[in-house]
Length: 144
Image (cartoon, rainbow, N blue to C red; front, side):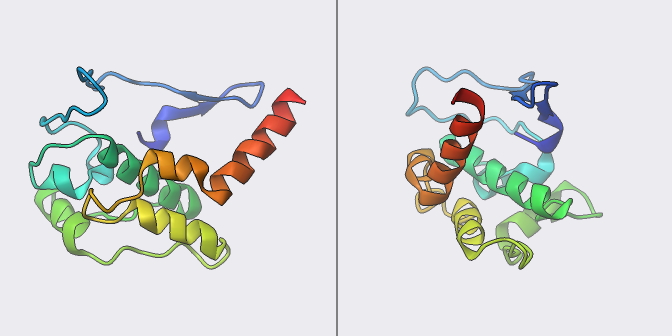
C-alpha cells in the first residue's frame, strides 16, 4: 500500500491499483518472508528480515496516513535502504501536525508501534470510533 496506488474515479470512489507484488498466503494466519514493497512503507519486521503478515499492512497504512497529512513519508533517508531501515526501526515516530485531532494522531501512532504483536489490528481499527464515524459519513454520502 502506498499513495501512488490509491486512485479516485470520476464518481469520487476510491480505487486501489497495482497489486503486482502482492503475495497470496494459504490462510489468514500465515506469514510471508520475502522482502517486497516500497521501502518507505516497510515495517520494522521487514527491515529485520523477519516473517510478516497483516501487522505490516497496518504499518504501511499508518505511513500512508502520515503522508496524506504531511505530503512526506514518516521515515526517509538519502543514504540508501540500510539507513532507511535503521530510521524505521529507531527514529522517533513523528506526530501528525496539530491541525489534526489528537484522536487521529493516537490511532496513527497505534499503527506505527514497532513491535507487531502490540500494533493495533485491522479488527481494532474497524471498530474504533474514528473509523466508524468515517464509515458512517461515507455510507450516508453514497448510499442514502
